[in-house]
Length: 234
Ligand code: CA
Image 1 (spheres, protein in one colour):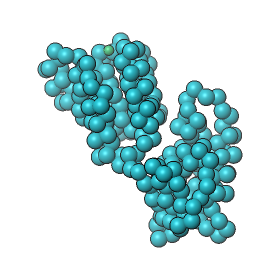
Image 2 (cartoon, rainbow, N blue to C red):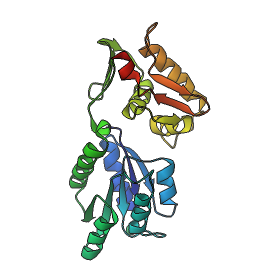
Image 3 (cartoon, helix red, strand yellow):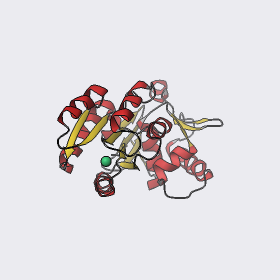
Image 4 (spheres, rainbow, N blue to C red):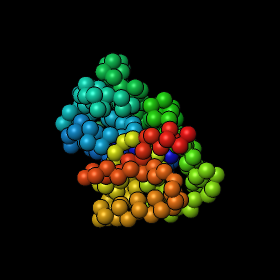
């Protein structure tokens, strides 16, 4: 399940606990400690869901939540607030500000996980779906299999993740830097041209002669899974 969860939490042990557990569940995890411009970070690279601590050093979780809800590009991102006990009225305010849910510290990780998945099923079903389909192309996350028109396609783990990431949001254009972050990880230094090499291999693997190419090159920007791919081939 490669949905991206953004954890905004200044208490290091909690941040680490959450990061560890969400990684173990297969999420892409990003962390911020609240000293950054959180709203900007979210709008530059929008996660699938945000776990937002209430008390942060610069700006309160509430203010961040309000700002995110006021921007068209971040309005729809599900937000779960992490609050301390005894902030009962604050919690009500939190929901009024536009948070989708909240948990009270100390919280149970399995319960939080369940709430995250339930929100994601509504907001980004493709981020939690086991099988992604577009036209004659099918990608199964459980078996790590890809098929086109029923024939098996062998992909390297990197190519699989690339296809999975792009297929999850057809039509969205990813820059090379965004694909590097999502597929290779944020802490790894890889040249952006590496993305071109792997996209090239991915195309070679999934396209036979005369078959339509679902991976679109967007000149000067990056790549996208063609949202018309299924329709063209239907
Ligand atoms: Ca805090």
